Length: 318
Image (cartoon, rainbow, N blue to C red; front, side, top):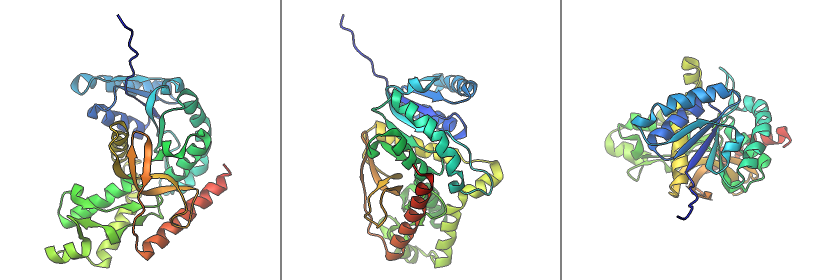
């Protein structure tokens, strides 16, 4: 009888807090992974989450869920990093950066030592700066270090547009680009429903689509996290769902176009920085970044966003 080596589809999660646990739960419900390993500085917390998730397995998909150590990142197709200090009420994502960069300096080399061949998906805020830091600390090719970026902002944007125009949010095609944070940029010039740009869609279907309306939708998109944190202390369900979507694109080699953060060249005038643009993701990570035909004010906004991120990166002296 020949001995066959079995390679289960493993996803490792570093950080078993709200985002990490919600992501593990979402991943379990999809059946995308055959193994989910939870790693946390508080090992008992990771064990508790794994136990709870395992009790859902008979009702969901056959999946091995367990609490582990960095050594258990070995063989993972993707290691998702959600560990870090949480955003506090009234605090911007960029205020977090120094604390979390120091945490990453400890985490990332241990992950890569166990798994030099997998992909890293970063969700910890400020995600663009920390994705850059993770790339530097890891020594991996930049295509294999991805940040969740504006996948959540884009989802919020599409949801709010769908509510305004009374359509399924999956039928709204619009992107938020740049920083996942206060300097992010809405791509109004290319936003469309059923291939119709918003001004045309509005006039054809009897909707008001003035600048005030659009500005309000974007402000609600940009500031959503602050409003949620005021009310419940943290955001996690939507970002966890975004992480599941990214991991699905990778594990299924889909070539999906998602607004994630990756290393950018100087196409828009600012390079050597991570920020979000529509990006084709497959099993190898970033296949390529799509260069949008942006309006002049959108290019200016993106350059401003990139400069803010670049300055923050420089302040870390990586």
